[in-house]
Length: 52
Image (tube, rainbow, N blue to C red; front, side, top):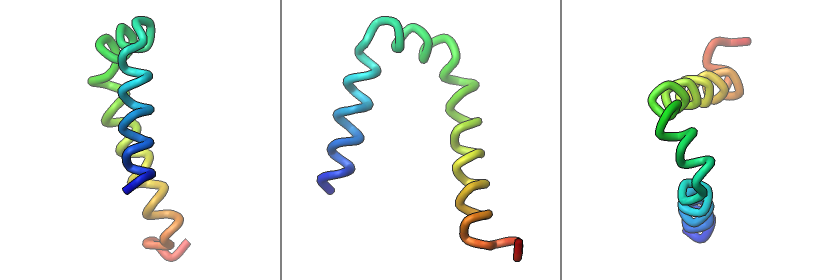
């Protein structure tokens, strides 16, 4: 739970920075799904879900 709190505080810290907040508001709807798809793919490959 401590590491989850650290991630939350880090996310808030970066999201409240004007430059990053502007970039997230502009590109977040594209970036967020790509990050989730890449993370899911990485989990599948590292978990050897495809027998690779």
